[in-house]
Length: 124
Image 1: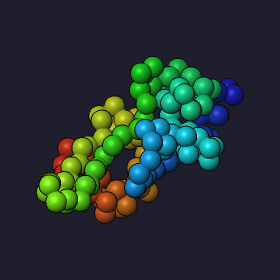
Image 2 (image 1 turned 90 degrees about the horizontal axis):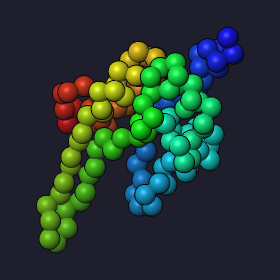
Image 3 (image 1 turned 180 degrees about the vertical axis):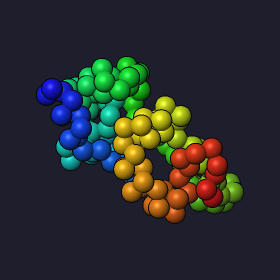
Image 4 (image 1 turned 60 degrees about the vertical axis):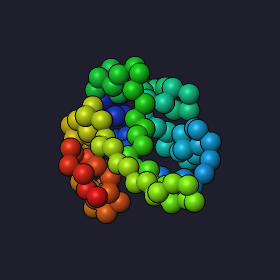
């Protein structure tokens, strides 16, 4: 089956992006420009890949697999420093564990080092 073999050979990564400034959809555009669009991105993504993930792996029509996992803001004259972390959504974690376990396994050391929360436990 062409669709099944396409998905089983698809490239997939967890990307740790650390933009210092930029526009609202900068990460989405840059990754698409590198031929590595974000799963579920209907504006900058890949329609055939999104369709196959929806049909075969129950990716929600509304799901964009992009997540702000941690934001760190420095102290200013008016504010204290801020370091906030938010675990990945359960549906994304489930999708990664079920369909891309090797990606999670390979990414875990860097995610842990960066304080990115995969489970309900805060790593910071």
